[in-house]
Image (cartoon, rainbow, N blue to C red; front, side):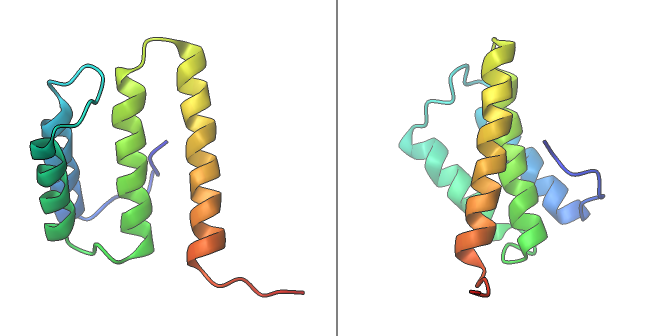
Length: 99
């Protein structure tokens, strides 16, 4: 799911921090503390308003979820969901010309 373009070191470090938050959670159930830690990591992330870093971070979150899944079918569904979310983001967050 993640892009092959190299990420800046600061973004990579933020992704590692996010991974550490969820490494002990089998089902990604979030506590208030987990969500607070995630929010802090995202708030401190370098380039947090740049589209490529946002997409890269979203891909990273989906990869964390995919790694927690057991079924190959579930993993394929998650890949499809990520594609749909990316399309939604590009369509709704960025102005599109109307014909």
